[in-house]
Image 1 (cartoon, rainbow, N blue to C red):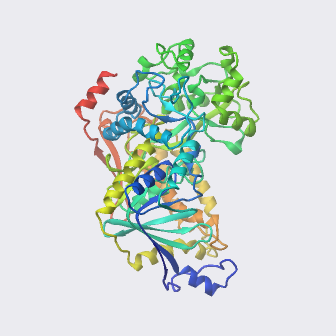
Image 2 (spheres, rainbow, N blue to C red; image 1 turned 180 degrees about the horizontal axis):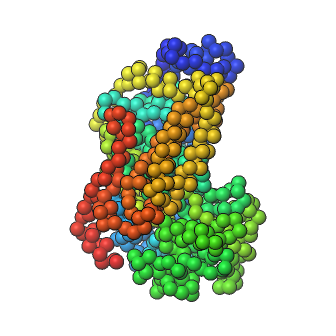
Length: 635
């Protein structure tokens, strides 16, 4: 249902010409907005958002999906390696219990154990469901879904489509979703959630093509907006990943947890500079790729964590046999968890053993020593990686090694949710996928992100529909809308002021400081410096200005987005300062060991009545005894 509403707020705001019309007409257009009514509003059109929308639609409620870009272009398409699910097609020793234990161990036991349990139990059904909807996975010789090795997983577990799994997942969900009764709003940006009292009742946004305001009334809202990698200088994330969903939820009153845990994927491109940070799938190492320093030595054998010594090979030959399916072999150290591999690479670079362009070498070409048709094998298993390096770096990965280095990839923290329903701490607001926290603890295992968004996207859609059926539609007062509209248009008003800031410069400076001060290795003095600089960035963001008109104006979009980027940057820095230990994706050079005290808490962040960010330590939920027994038996 759509309604066109006029609001006379011309005394509050002005804006430049719009598509050639005069200022007076723009004033009128600016003061109007279209209003839409839905039972469930899904913000985000990646894997979690589409899966949530499908499930809510199946429940018989009216559903809408908001896309920042075009449908099918969400960041999920860039996921390469596979979907982690204990199908046990390649190794029959695998089970949900092993997957659960691997996930908990990888997260350094800070995970929400209930989410880890649900994820491990339900992931196989979600993968089979995807297959039934048309996903074409690689196959075993007997026709089952093929699974590959990946870091931190004891057995081959990742169902995959070459190294283009995310693309196949989105293609399948998109094709299924468009046959449901789902309204899709493409190229729209949500700038604020709408509330009635303590309850979320909708969202305020605009379409990016024309800049016209849209008000979405909804009984339930699902945040499925992905991550925040673009607040760092070097990132594998697409430009949309600015932490917008996390920030929107926070400003609506939702609790955030685990924001200190940022994952730096060990292998991103380092050369040429134009593609620095672009992801190189962990599947390269799963297929036998090895890491070497400039001396040609496999340095990962130098540092194997105590927690994984019993599962890691001690010689190169055993590691190779593992990648080829030998059930009696242990995994090579290149397939240890991402946090550890990234730190080992950083150490090699810092100590002068890196490659010419500031990375290390990832070599898959060496398997020609083991396989007669190695070149064709690599092209078949890793087609995207072959073309990526051939086209962008002039490197033939079947003949020579790649230069790689860590890249900001994922945030384990985000919006706190109920494990079973995905409801946040704010009534009417749900979250799923990367913007939600709990499943991964201190570090995410590769492949768990795609199964995460399938399992909890479904649960979010299911329970948001139940909530919508049991609640009445809320209302939004005009004052709330006018305040948001005034703020959204304020960058145009600042264009000619002496304090006007270029939004792109503010964004670039923020990325630079986050990379330098809140990166892989952290120390209290630098975190304090970062927090002070972020305060200055908040003020600079308030002066961000733009010219032109509202029709597809990147400067305007960025000026608005800065609020979210600064909010998430501050949450990461504050949480990192609060956790005085090293665990998972959070490494403190001044506190290099693990702490028994911090092993029992999650760091929580909420907005207080004065608008300040409040940091607390909250006790970790005690694990159920039967699940603890499973972990103990598999150590």
